[in-house]
Amino acid sequence: MQNLVIIPTYNEKENIEKMIRKVFSLEEFFHVLIVDDGSPDGTASIVKRLQKEFADRLFIEERAGKLGLGTAYIHGFKWGLKNGYEHLIEMDADFSHNPDDLVRLLDSCRNGADLAIGSRYIKGGKVANWDRKRLLLSYFASWYVRMILWIGIRDTTAGFKCYNRKVLEKINFDAVTFKGYAFQICMKYAAVKHGFKVVEVPITFIDREFGTSKMSSSIFKEAIFGVWKMRSLDL
Ligand SMILES: Nc1nc2c(ncn2[C@@H]2O[C@H](COP(=O)(O)OP(=O)(O)OP(=O)(O)O)[C@@H](O)[C@H]2O)c(=O)[nH]1
Ligand SMILES: [Mg+2]
Image (cartoon, rainbow, N blue to C red; front, side, top):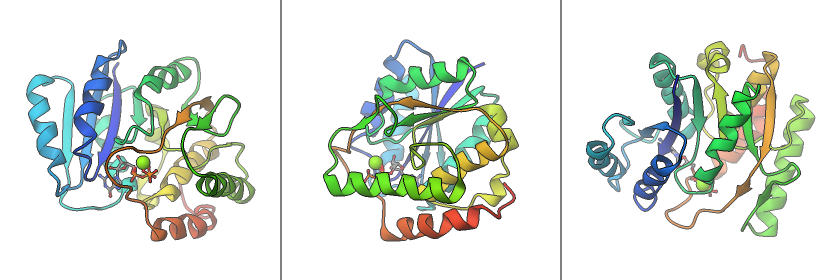
């Protein structure tokens, strides 16, 4: 059974080719699915060019417009489940998540975790180059989520994760309509609620060097109110 890395993209032309080549250079065998939301910068055409070189392991799903990170992942999960993958991994295109850590996340799932989270806030984990303000905000956000949802996860907003397919088969995607950090939180909450084994693996998170961030104040608001809403969803 194979492993699928799902990478959502919106205007990642500076990163995407380098990222795809890096994943395919790893010793472990991964397939890659790009979910592109009609990036105006032509990210999808770069992927399609590379598909000629990596025909049997590089895939793309194109959506008409920017519909949000959360729905892009759910689109990717459905595609991955339908195509029979055993492990499905979430990873950003911007190198904040180091592809060298893919194997450690996968190993954690092979060794009994149902969901392995690349974590900045456990022993051995860190953030390489955020200013103090952003780090404090992220750390506080994780604490806020822990207090409300009562889940024993240190890095609740983390987006570098490996799921065993059985976790995704169980979650009711129709109830998960969040787009940003709230999506990442909700998927962890759902896994814990269903009684799956969640393990945090320390990683070093690096701020993006190329391209621009797609996060906005509406994404923060969604997370602040979303954590309260999650408690009553049929996940
Ligand atoms: N398909 C799709 N991908 C998206 C969307 N929004 C963001 N992405 C991708 O999701 C990943 C994470 O987005 P970022 O903008 O880096 O968000 P972030 O990592 O929380 O924020 P920064 O730390 O500021 O980079 C990147 O690969 C983006 O290209 C979207 O609406 N649709
Ligand atoms: Mg990023």
